[in-house]
Length: 133
Image (tube, rainbow, N blue to C red; front, side, top):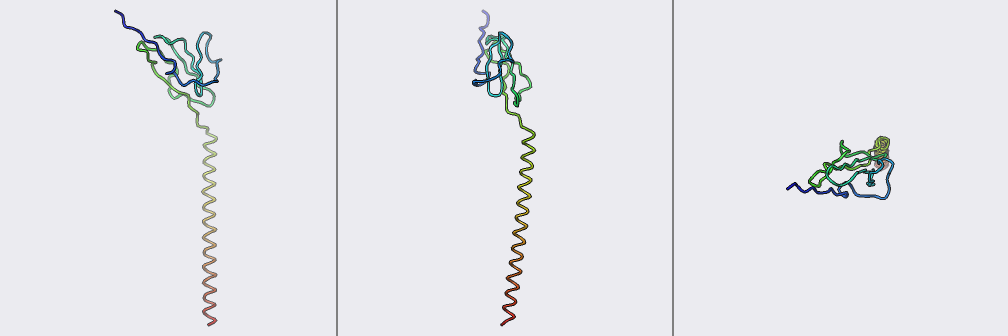
């Protein structure tokens, strides 16, 4: 007897979403929109393939974007399309943090100056009161 081949599950390819880019799939391929991209697949029987295409601003979580439906009914590998870190926002966050630190240092310096002035005034006023008696 020959081994029974099982089909792969489309749901294993990714959680479906409503919109995506169908133009990345070839004619005859089935389109599955996933968060951050599109999966194009030509079936779910063993030997079928699926290709992940991540959308703009997203990157693949795996270096291999082609997956194969194996005879045991499991895709050879799976991946997701995750949101890329925006270098502009990362550097902007750095400058915001730097600004906050500088502002805190300035506030601490101003408080220190006010405390010193108050201390000196109180001391001067106390010594002048002591001198009057």
